[in-house]
Length: 447
Image 1 (cartoon, rainbow, N blue to C red):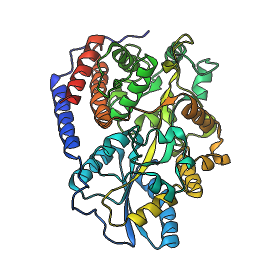
Image 2 (image 1 turned 45 degrees about the horizontal axis):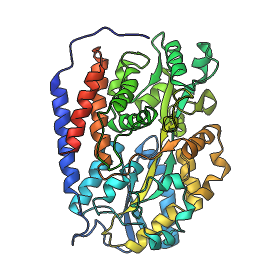
Image 3 (image 1 turned 30 degrees about the horizontal axis):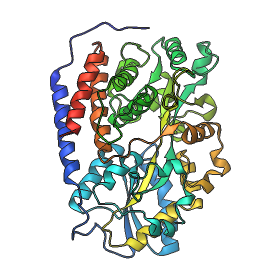
């Protein structure tokens, strides 16, 4: 194990500012309940047009426009309905949606992270996908069960329909592995640590992480928590952030940059796919990411230069939950409940989830079609997608579909961001430090 020397603690004001920010987020999320159930109208009132907020799926917003605009033109030719597109970056998408649900002034159709489904469902702003609405787009049986499991709270009609499915995998640089004399990618965390140490030399590192990105942090906390035999919510939906298993899970992830030293200190500030860039350019030998093919290609990395395997697991003696190595990742599509063009919105969702469009769009983004007929296309039989499809079907789990899930991502993810900053500053991150931050996050959840 590599260690780093200690240095003075990072200023507490960073922590205080983050807590203030998360408190403000909590207030905004609380205020958005029922925002679209009153008399306010949405942002569009023409039967011949729709407004659509798309999430940034490609390597850039311009890339998304190149992918989406020809398909939207195709829809307009078929239906006479113009779709006014806005691609919204991930770092502002949730805030934009929450503001829209609070004000009642939102788009007609929008993409949401599937982990937000239950949280946004609780606002009352999204159209429920009951049997009647699902039938208008071909029925629920067209979609994979794992994707639908992340479309809203259990026992309620889905708040969205799946659009793009994703799973986390471990990407590894074949040349870096060969140069280090590593014969195969790691399957267990013990092997992972040994591999990371062999790769960390000459200014290069074993792993790239996105330590400044709260959402990425929370996703890994959830998966590692599962492997440690815990969850971040109990069966009643109450937060259990600071339990010993969750503390151990977060410590394992933070230690990659801290005590273990297999990720660079600068990774603590990464927020916008810089870790993908570092992997693609040979600065790091491994990357844990969701369907990275198109992003890697944008940085000039060719498919034969990397391999993909499932994220490592604990030893074989671990229980069933410990065999989870990905969240059910993906993007869902929702309709703003108070749209003035409900018929047009439903037609648009039907179009975007058609077998043809699912094949086109998921091929462009390197994701997996949640529409099962589209997933049979040979375009989704590449070596990397075969691995990710298997992970999604066999060893993934949806994040808890509870109303406060989006706050969990913000609060726990921000706590982890602060812990990464502490590790990057050279200060040891102890179990006590992690428990303290997770307890503070849990208290914010409960206010």
